[in-house]
Amino acid sequence: MKENISHLQIAAETWTPQHVLDWAFETFGDSIAISSAFGAEGMVLIDIASRVRNNFRLFTVDTEFLFPKLTT
Image 1 (cartoon, helix red, strand yellow):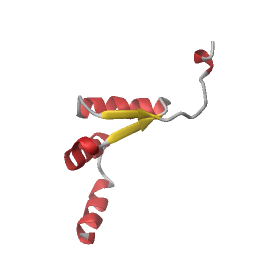
Image 2 (image 1 turned 135 degrees about the vertical axis):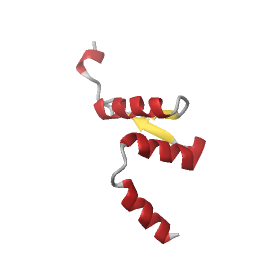
Image 3 (image 1 turned 60 degrees about the horizontal axis):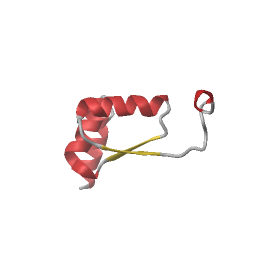
Image 4 (image 1 turned 30 degrees about the vertical axis):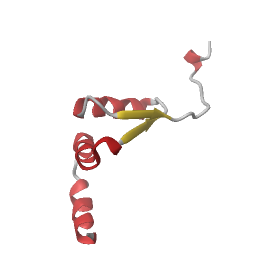
């Protein structure tokens, strides 16, 4: 098992984000959930994930930080 993980780790170094998400969805199925606080990085991840799979779980992280445009 350790040898397989080591091989996978080396191979994954060159994977695109799409490939990583595709592998995760294929490997873990509906057990995958993506967290986001809806910052720039999270929005990119959500966009990429939606292109890889049209149905995935998403949950928010409350950072207790409100963007200025949202506080009015």
